[in-house]
Length: 347
Ligand code: EPU
Image 1 (cartoon, protein in one colour):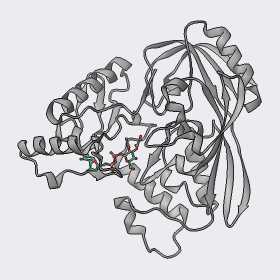
Image 2 (cartoon, protein in one colour; image 1 turned 90 degrees about the vertical axis):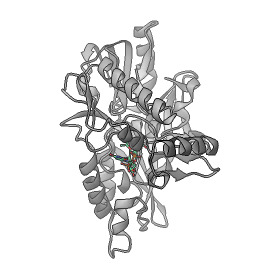
Image 3 (cartoon, helix red, strand yellow; image 1 turned 180 degrees about the vertical axis):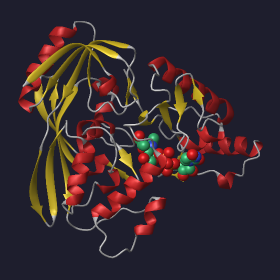
């Protein structure tokens, strides 16, 4: 079934709770409706553009989107046992990610528990390669079924074709912008106990006998609660910036600069990646610039985790958020010589 709407307010459809608007909305709830929904969106949009949105948890809308938003609302999932305790679950793109995670954990299956509490849909997580506490969604994805709007055909993209990386996938390749509508996502989960407990606060669970996916989920939910705003109380889009990765030469220059600022380099959190490049937490950089808990206009920086920009008054516009983004980027660039890049998608 396909539903269309005109001139709608987008506040319910973005977790930053911006009062943006869009000219047209096309929603469909079955994979086989994708060709007709896509053709309809094309006929309505003219030159005004088409974008695909899931749960709106990682998106910053402008004031008014003149084109058509396509929303795949495909629900439900089917599980097939693969043998050896492995299970393949084919999930509709419109399923709320945390509903899936809660059910998979409750069934005693491992693989998704560290992703507990991430807002958004399964389709969005497959595009964005959502991740938390040492696990990235892409690791569990076996294949994704899409409608290809360029070739006008259904495609199944295998794990290798999905090109997953840190908050990255084939859907992020610039030439693929708006090309694929994610319909269903196949994930693999396992009955065999495989907890991933390397992230600091999760380490305390290591070695606990009888540990279940629900135990890990509960711990993750507690950690999230202590750091991140609840999206039903405070508008946010999760981490606003990516954690920057610098080359070893850039890292050396950064160390010199940091020493010059009187900061002990040993105190700077960082992770050396394969190949020698270095990931520096954007939260640390923003914190050191003094932005934690500050506001600018109606936008603000979350007081417990400065990587999260918030709709501080509930009345922020996209301009408020953008002004805060620019101020933080300029500050971090000026003090540390590092250019932060947004993790959120702007429309
Ligand atoms: N830090 C500070 N000050 C703070 C908070 C953090 O200096 O107030 C430093 C600390 O050194 C800390 C480091 O920043 O060790 C990293 O912080 P945290 O562990 O909270 O994680 P993050 O790197 O800021 C990333 C993801 C989150 C994910 C967490 C946990 C990105 C862009 N963000 O944040 O994902 O939940 O790790 O795995 O990679 C999201 O993508 O929306 C998101 C919330």
